[in-house]
Amino acid sequence: MSAGIKGHTGSRTRSMLFYGGDCFFLMLIGSMGAVVMWQMHEWLAALAAAMIAGMVLAMVIQMSLALAAAPLLGSIESMTPSMVVAMLSPMVVCVCHMAGCELSRRAALTLGLIFGTVMYVLLLFYGKLYRRRLHRFFPTS
Amino acid sequence: MRWQIASIWDIRSKLYDLCEASELRRGPSKTALFRDMDGRVLFVAVGTGVDIRHFPPGLDITAIDISAAMLCRAEARRKRYPGVLHFVRADALNLCFADESFDTAVTSCTMCSVPDPVRALRELRRVLRPAGQLLMFEHVRSRNRVLGLALDIMNLWTRLGGTEMNRDTLGNVLTAGFRIRRVTSVYLDIILSIHAAKA
Image (tube, rainbow over the protein chains, first blue to last red):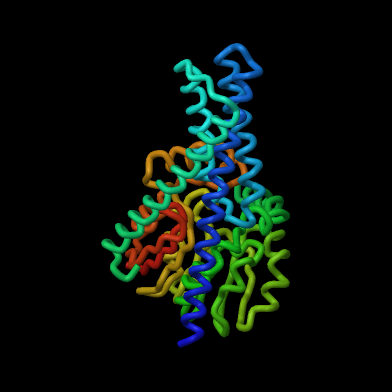
């Protein structure tokens, strides 16, 4: 009985650590992507050039960090959602830039952090919905 | 084609445990899935043997892989298994076993890597006894549009290394003539534990 409780607590702690790791990782990718795009808009005057350079750099950083995080967080688990964040978070900075809203570096960083967190929360909900759906189809799941 | 695939996996075997096995996160889900192994077991694509530690003890398991380098790396882990574990170098698309010779067939991140997953599953169906069980730990394409798109984009380069990120493995299992008994989510709708039986 006590071994069962210990096992359950251990697995809950494990899950919490992975939840925390996933959240931190998406926040990191979101902020890096936003800051990189912000920096490109600072350095390059041509909008298209800044957008392309920012996107490419954000994707390169995301892939490198995802590979580095893979042994800890899992390869697909780190690569897939972070790719979405690395695509969308720089785009938000671009949209702000095109709308004439000039962000500071700190604002871009904060925007990226928020974006990563929102993505993480959405994924949590999606995972929960999917598990509920599976449970409906396969009651023993 | 077969030896081309084998050579890709020979190369990937060098970094497989570090970059792709993701043992820390997926280990408990694999242990839970493999607990249902029963009777004579066929394990397809054993790779570097990272899954061996999750096998229940005392079973009679035949593990295959197309890559000699993978089997070589898995040898030390094979020796530590407290049961009977044979390695056979074989192609999942053309299994060298008699019809209905296994009670359980197991795959772990295999269906992303075989060139024709339905054919591989039909081969597994052939070697399974009637009502034999199929246990799968597989990653599949997400049904979510955004995540699915991310997997499609990733697939552009992962397929060069022999891994397809966007397969409909649940659909393929049904097409190959299995009945799905239970599916458990390991990570969203991307990594799944699948319990199926020969229909």
